[in-house]
Amino acid sequence: MNHLMKRWQLMSFGLENLQLAEVPIPQPASHELLIKVSAVSLNYRDLLVIDGKLLPDLPRMPFTPASDMAGEVVAIGPGVSRFNVGDRVTGNFWTQWLEGDAPAEMARHGQSMGGPLPGVLSEYVVLHEEVAVAAPVSLSDEEVSTLPVAGLTAWFALVETGKIRKGDRVLIQGTGGVALAGLQLARSMGAEVVVTSRSADKLRRAKALGASALIDTSVTAEWSQKTLELTDGQGFNHILELMGGDNIRQSAAALAPGGRIAQIGFLKGDDIILPALPIMLKRAIIQGITVGHRRAFEDLNRAVDQYGIKPVIDKIYDFTDAREAFKHLERGPFGKVVIRVG
Image (cartoon, rainbow, N blue to C red):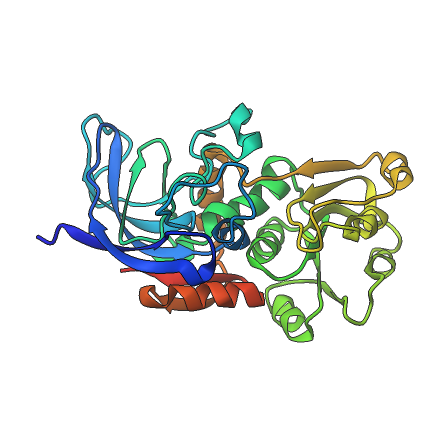
């Protein structure tokens, strides 16, 4: 048996420093699983980690990036009770957040996979059994790999905290992984969904996924006015705020009384700027979302099987083409970018 594996790793920050290395296959200790990774999906945060721009405590080098994977348990350490060899699994991004209130260290980026903890862009990884999550049976490994951050973030915003109901009106910004997961989940639960994007082509593709209306923000910069026309002035019960900066001013204008803004992304800037009065008059809730806990992930996976949701993958890259996959992510994919590992 070959005792070596390949993994992508950084010796210093910057995508140009991402190198494919050969290292020993790790062995599972007590309560750990050895997982043969079959697919890894990429998130925007991975680029920030690779560039050394996200974490207050920089990860130790050599560092393997990426947080989201799917694979098969091929060996177990002593004391493991949650999984068996042969089980298909994925992993929970916040390794210590199992349910309920989040651990305090999460506020400082502690204990998240793919930075500061080692990532998963590797042929094998070891996870504690409490971090592993059973994969939905209805999805391919490539599809499963899209769920740990993008899928769970959308679920936590709309379902776990948002308590979405049939007939609710949902506004989703953009067509990345979180946005399209939110579109699919909201439609599965009987909500009406409006999608905004600067790309007419991506909007057409969002329409095919069930969006009831579309707003091209390259044509309509003040998009909140258009949303009020689309809702007869009622506004939206849920808004997935993925832009940040001053964009949240328009989200506040588009919100229904008692509605929720899920603050998820900051593509336009990491400071959010919004007027106080609409937030007060509408009794609005602004909910910061940072993925979610393991119990919610298990709920999501059951829903994926129940509703037949198929995550949207823009392109699947070979393991040796990881740098090209990250460059695709920089360009802005429609849905998820996935790397097939084995």
